[in-house]
Image (cartoon, helix red, strand yellow):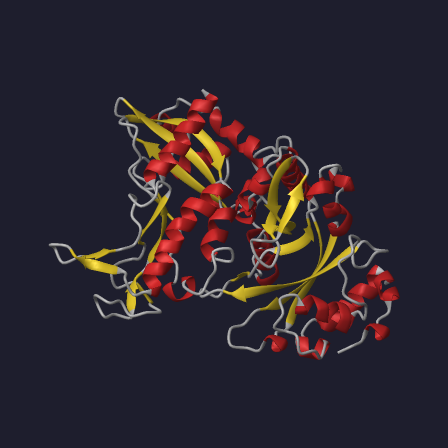
Length: 468
């Protein structure tokens, strides 16, 4: 391992051409060949390997970009191969710590975010299971600059985060508040707290970051030979740098139209199972599903069409991906996939209400779960679920028809969410870390977290009342 005496700070003043020439020599190399060090089990070790091993300057946490003369920031990040053979980003790309006490005083152009991250030199390595970390290989390197539309959205995201700080709500910031630019928690644990300027409440330390889904879009473009998909903004105008306002304006024009009238107007097959989704796509003028556009993919926005019956009820609860029993018991809440999932997901709810036996387009809203509900209600359900799985207490007994009853939290346990099956059938299972006491089985049907239909209705009705 190199000592500080051997580092040369002047290497941070390389020209763009010199930087790119060096990077070319790194692609195809394993980490151990770049930097012979024994600390590859540390999370930041890959970045250190490139800074110290390849560019020969000492690691730092300065507010300026790594290559200061060219204003280029160096980042090293993993991607992974999925079961279907495709690739995705393994994690978000952390940019820089947010100083609550200073950042709100600046314009975007003056911000620490923009000062440090205008141009990103991103090196991608594939994270492979059962391979020593020092043998991971740099496979791709890009010089990333934000497109005009991406930058407009990122500026709006930055403003959303700053507005919460100005409102004394830094402790309520959530990654779901924004689209591409997140404000992720950054620290050893939940006790890493910081002062904020307009509230006595301490807030979790957070950093600006590019969301995992944003990075996945970049990875897909790097690893796929298919051409880039059409932008959403090829079909709708971006109003005031806001995806929300742009889409809401377009869809709200048709408030009060019946489903039947909309199907005739936009030539949608009345027998199609996804006719409500097709109506929305046709309203926006896009050729594919809204959820599949690059903008919605990068922002992790899930589109949900919701039918509210004439009795003011929603039939279905809302499911999330199934969790793995052996994984969930090893996690802490702060680092859990469940918390990350609820915090990072934003929804577009498109509401159809029933009147006189027919459904009418009634409302459209973007929504993400407030962090206080995540860290209270969802955590309570998660804690109970983990306890049940750890102790082998999943099955409570059997119903008269022979079906199993579980101890998993039901809709009566919490007003926000519950746990129930989410597999193709009873034989669609995951392995258990502890054998179930009642059945003696070491596998169990896949389950997931669900948002209660009553909770979703409450969210929708509150929004409807506020805009009425």
